[in-house]
Length: 217
Image (cartoon, rainbow, N blue to C red):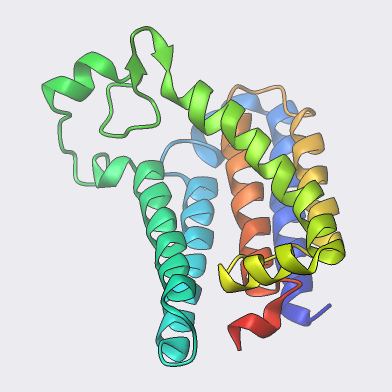
């Protein structure tokens, strides 16, 4: 494990454990200072997403003449996804620039903010269906199933490598599962902010230091 990998782990679990302790010692400070919207922990989440975005763009530039179009397209898709999630985290700068929500978001967004993940359609929460339940299934497959298939099947390994999919190392899988477990110790409703931070920081580690790092060189 490199020094940067170790540093990412220290930052992730240091801030995570600090947040859990403060949520129990001073929940008001935790809710309205540490995990508040546009606060410290949310900006740390955005920083991780921006690092992933930057890594994808650098890889695209360096490999544009060395990899197949689908590989390069996959890099751009991941970069675009990170940009979208970062924008959603900040409600696309609405609070920063004090922009009022349109009538559509005021009427259909549970927080009356300009973002999509808090939309309520036909009484169903988009956040609960897509960004929670579905995402949990995707993460479970990615962390627990994909590494096994990648190791045992040459066809799947070739497809994953050609699709520019970073495969998690064992310690990254264990660390991310530990993040999910520790969140249960946080009594605050703002625990989701900690979970997003921990998840994004560990995914940043996977993208920067994947098991199949050779495909990005």
